[in-house]
Structures are given as structure tokens and as C-alpha cells.
Length: 248
Length: 201
Image 1 (cartoon, rainbow over the protein chains, first blue to last red):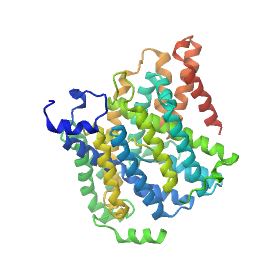
Image 2: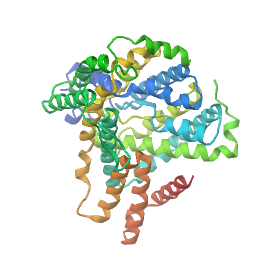
Image 3: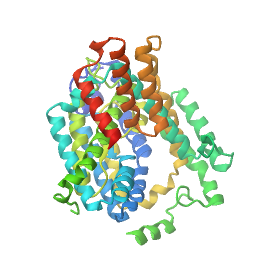
Image 4: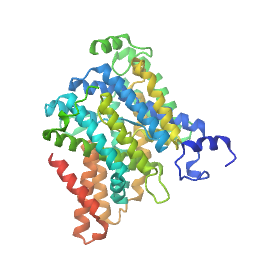
């Protein structure tokens, strides 16, 4: 395996101490590119979602969009080059809501000041990381709780998925409930089943193929339902462009 | 640069900075642990690999977010989708990072991919991330109960940080109550104190 030239090429991006012949970490250039595209497709919502949340803090949409793209690109590339982990770093959901609703709207802090707070907490983080305090925190977390965190995040991400598809919806009496079957929900269910089958059959790029297939399935629904904010016909929606320039 | 560096250092801003630090800290750390455990991206000691460098990148991301004008940067749970596709090296995140750049100019194109198209990926990655649940000692209740509380409260409170806070606190209380002091270290107690502070703030 060590004679494999792709493997040697990839060693530049491989964590320093992972052995070249570890079967668990077998990979090749094509796998890495497909994985990167898949992760991008799963995270890119932040490019539009982040500005629309920070708009509540009074920040200009187009400026936040540019900042979001720059922060995501620079941080993720740095993660790959310096830390060599396949983990995307971008402005986080939850943190943006906290920034907009709790700090700016709730506490009445100006967004310029709140950005200063973001900057200073970053500086504190850099100091804590360089002096290994953050590593010590991770190592102090009992293994049993780490397994719990991974599984809990698994439940959480699935919940977010069901919620994004409007499959699980809010319900006054029971807090959450299931949506009535409609074309959008059914498209999601079909996409979910197709993607499941692709994954079970270990098709290369299964998640990516699943995302594109569901996108194609959604095109007719976009025409029928006309929900331009999330689903449209597959060509850039000019109404959306107008909205962009209007809000900038 | 629109950020206000002096105004943000006023005493009144300290609870804000603390809350931001705490939330960002545990969101990022938990995401690293979650992705690392589920994908077995661990070093020979079983710790998340390249942890220090990853956390430095995460910290720099928050700093530049302040400068560029965005909410704090953090590690993304959705990275697990790429890991599930076989991504193991930094090339995966470099590819994803480069793909972001054109969308500075092409953002309206993003609406081509509707949220119901990425939703199945998120749900199925959830299934993939459940794997470590098997490694919880369900028969040993002083392990299982705090682990269960931490796990279930993450989706129920819609917050990774809230889940982990209650996991920490219940772990400390249960372990001390049954006399297992060796399983509670001083760092964990320090984290507990900050957790309680975060709940009050």
C-alpha cells in the first residue's frame, strides 16, 4: 500500500502520527474530494442562513454573507492544512442566534460592540488553546460522557434534519409532532429512502447522490408550491436577487 | 472593520463574553469529540487526533469572525457527512473550504439545493453518529445515568452545551454520592463551577 502514489501525495494532509498503513484511515484523492463536496453541501446553508439571522441584529445582509463565506473558507482551509482534520469550521448555528437575539436584541448591546466581544473571546480561546487548557478540558471529560455527547449530537442532527424537512413540526400540546403528508414531506421521505438504500449498498458518494437526487425530485414541487425561499425551479431565482440587493 | 474593541471590554460586557466563551467552547469541543468518536478519528491514546491544532484553528476562526463581521466560528457537526463518505484527511476540509469561495458572488445559486435535499443526509448522519452509544456501560448505572442525561438533553434542549452541562453535573453528583472520587478530577469540578455559572448568567 505504501507504494500507492496517491497515498504518498495524501500524506501531506494526513495527521502527523497516523500510520500510513492504518486500514481504518484508508483513503484516496477521489474519496477526499467527494467527502469535501458532501460536507460542503451539508454546511453551505450557513452562507444564506447566517446573514438572515444576523439581520435581526441590524447587520447588513450582503456584508454578513461575504463575512460568512470568508470565515468559513479561511477556517476550513486552515483546519485542513494545519490540523489536517476533515472538519469544516464556519460561523455556528446557535451561536448566531445567541449573538442576534440574546446579546443584541435581548441585552440591547450594539452589534459593533458584540462583534468586539466575539473578537475578544477568540483571543481568549487562542490563549487557552496555546497553553493547552482546552486540551486539558477535553481530557478531563470522562469517556462515558464523550460517547454520550457523540450519540446526543447524532440525535440532535437527525432532529434538525427532520425539522428542516418540516417532517417534525411544532405542536402546542405535545411540543413536537408530525406534519400532515404533503408533496414536500413526501419528497423528503422518498429522498431519505433512496439515500438509505445507497448508503446500505455502500455506493461511493451515496450522500452526495442522495442530495442531488432529492434536489431533482424537489424541482416540480418548487413550481407547484412556489416556496422560493427554500425550493425553486433550478435556475437562479431573480426575486431572490432583488431581495438581496434590497436588503444590502 | 466595524467591530468596537474598547466598548466590548466594558465591565457590563463580561457576562456576554463569558456566555459566548462558554457556549462556543463547549459547542466546539463537543463537536470535535462527537465527530472524532463516531468516525474514530482518534490518536493512539484514544484522544481526538490533532486536538490542539484543531482547537487553535477553531479559536482563530472566532477571532477573524469578529474582524470580518460574523458570529463566532465553530466546528461543524455536519462534517460527519463527509467523514461517512470516507474523508479522513485535511484534504476534505480544504475541498469544502475552497468550495465556499465562489459563493461570495453566486449566493442566489444556493437556493437551487432546497433544505429538504440535505435533510435526509442529516438524518442518516444521525444514525451514523449513534454508534458510540454501544460503548456506554448501560449495566453500570453510575456511568449510564449521567451519560443518558447528557445524551437525551442535547436534542431536547436544542443545545449541545445544555446537554453536556447536565451530563457533567449529574456525573459529579452521582460519582461523589457513591464514593467513586477517583472518577471526578479537579478539572471536572472546575468545569462544573463554570457550568453552574453559565446556567445563572
